Figure 1 (cartoon, rainbow, N blue to C red):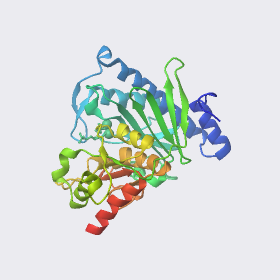
Figure 2 (spheres, protein in one colour; figure 1 turned 60 degrees about the horizontal axis):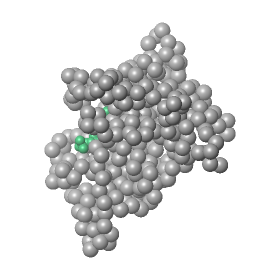
Figure 3 (cartoon, rainbow, N blue to C red; figure 1 turned 90 degrees about the vertical axis):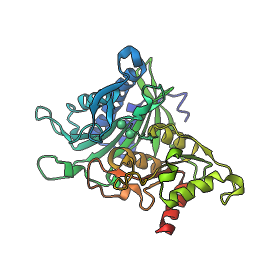
Figure 4 (tube, protein in one colour; figure 1 turned 90 degrees about the horizontal axis):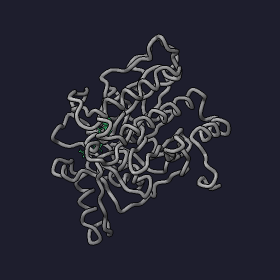
Length: 339
Ligand code: AHG
Ligand code: MN
Ligand code: MN
């Protein structure tokens, strides 16, 4: 069936998943539709740019000690407002909020918990380069009355769904509910998400890596070894020339990898040795890792599968190697050899 001739909407896709595969209870379906609607609103703000007064700094700092951009704050508010009243959620957590946001008493409490990076790639907002939203869905543990931060500390393998939206030349939504990865494109005239690709797969091999090369001198030896071997090209141990891309928006870099293969690295570095990495486990690495694995790729922290890591803090950081399976396995093996 060509998805281009017969248009399948996000709603239809979700209903079919629910009917045929029993994968999506109705609360989860509502949740995904609400997140997609919120992304549509964020997309409209992103598109307005200077005309909507959404560029520049908000002059506030988040819990990570990073200066917030206006769009970081706007996207966070849009996601909370959209999700708090529907009865599908018990609580939310965000890169931009220190503590969890429990659904207020005036609304019914649902079975799910939502985590998000409302605006990924903040440094690209003002320069008109692709940015995105990343989200991860967990189930509220059974029993226990009030939802707490400890309820969120579940490994990535427990995710019920994960996705990201890219605000780029096209606005696209990539989603997994654990049965492969589907891609939806926003039809602005119709205001609807249309399935434009199903069952995305990442080639196992690649000749393209994505890493912030300016950090090379700070990396651990296995990472330097891996990248230097790529750089030595066809006359080096890899016997082939590699290309490099670095957009500095994880959503856009990982999306390219989902489209044509590649490997994405954000490793630990010795400038801040106490931090496991730059990226956050619960709302960046876990959802992206789930999507990448569902597309046949791999995701590790250099030692362990990311989705098997037991989080100890909401805003925990992690070292990230994800994308084409054979490259991730190679980089991981270099860490094991070094250990
Ligand atoms: P965020 O904007 O949510 O803080 O995330 C930015 C992340 C990620 O998207 C990207 O891969 C990385 O930071 C870019 O880091 P560099 O500035 O080191 O290139
Ligand atoms: Mn981010
Ligand atoms: Mn962010």
